Length: 134
Image (tube, helix red, strand yellow):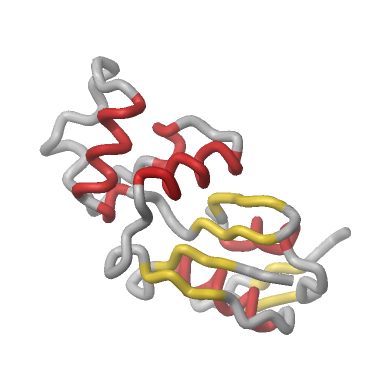
């Protein structure tokens, strides 16, 4: 199985997601999207593959979201995508893509549904234990 993660190593949720992928026996293609941002086409394809709105992928915390006034409903999807391309930190993370689909993995355990052999349990960085129930 091919697994791709759009990853920010400074983000605990992203680190936990990456660790769960690796614990499941997969070595993903890791794209540090702040260093290598997706193209407009890639970003639109990811949003479509996840079946979410552009706003669902827009990150507020720790970004220029408020400074740019992006909460205002006047912004079109194309304008919001442009803001994410100019300021990749606005792209929420981690986004994981596998043969089973694409998903924004917040919380990190959402990645388990995308893996062929997910771990039965995992301890996150903060000590929280995630147990797979299905």
